[in-house]
Amino acid sequence: MASDTDAPVVVGVDGSEIALHAVRYAAREAAYRQRPLRIVHAFIWPMMRVPLGPAPGAPADGGLRNQAERCVDEAVAEAAKVAPEVTVTGAVVDGAPAAVLVAEARHAVEIVLGNRGLGGFAGLLLGSVAVQVSAHAECPVLVVRGEARADGPVVVGVDGSELSQEAVRYAFEEAAWRGTELVAVRAWLYPTPAGPGDILPLVYDLDAFREEEERTLAEAVAGWSERFPEVPVRRLLVRGSPGRALVEQSRTAQLVVVGARGRGALGGLLLGSVSHAVLHHAHSPLAIVRKLRTVEGT
Image 1 (cartoon, rainbow, N blue to C red):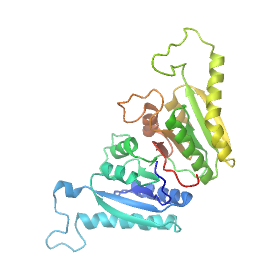
Image 2: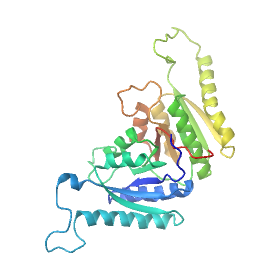
Image 3: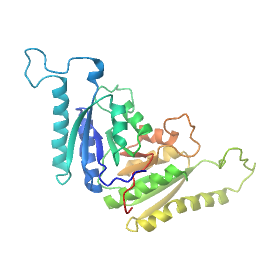
Image 4: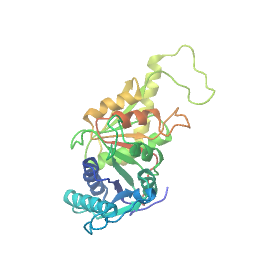
């Protein structure tokens, strides 16, 4: 992971009200993190080989290119209202939305998206751009959906995987900036093999297994609690589906954080089943963490 103290928060816009809602959220994120905010509109029309300028006889400010620039200018102005202390820039970048944002993620501290933008089909639970970017971005992706609350905890899913540890670190940072509690959730249904070829006993002690789960959960947050002593931590062990447990916790959360893929995920899946479930059904904004950009001194 490259260290970059100037990496911005990047937010994608398309002219929709949902995108402006994401801009407002991203501006607050940039203020929390003391980072610049970069607003990006992916301009797909050059790929379609259609005229980009005003039509003959039309006003000089007409045409698709000018419309895209106005979209970005409106978003920049909206961000400045929310967080005037944040340095905000905007850009119209030629390309398809998912490809443009995945490229932006290489130099961003995080990507912020609305859960659905212009042109979304009513039957889809989540815009395809958010799914693709969450699956491939090289930084955390924050999808603004549900209710953006000023109260409530930051909730993080813990499964013991490497990505889960990245998610825990991100969640502690968010809880510290927001001045709120962190709820670490670990859900289990039954014992599972730790690795390929492992054989489970036919009979096992549920109480002993539950104690082991509690110990794993405690260990996952212990080191970060020392690093962020100001963050109150509540550990929640749930017997049931991890995805369902996190969706339920999202009802009162400011933010839910998950790793992009955890234990047991099939290599062919773009997102793990838990992150995919929460991405589609959470009642609060959601952060999906693949890797974190490190900063000197952290």
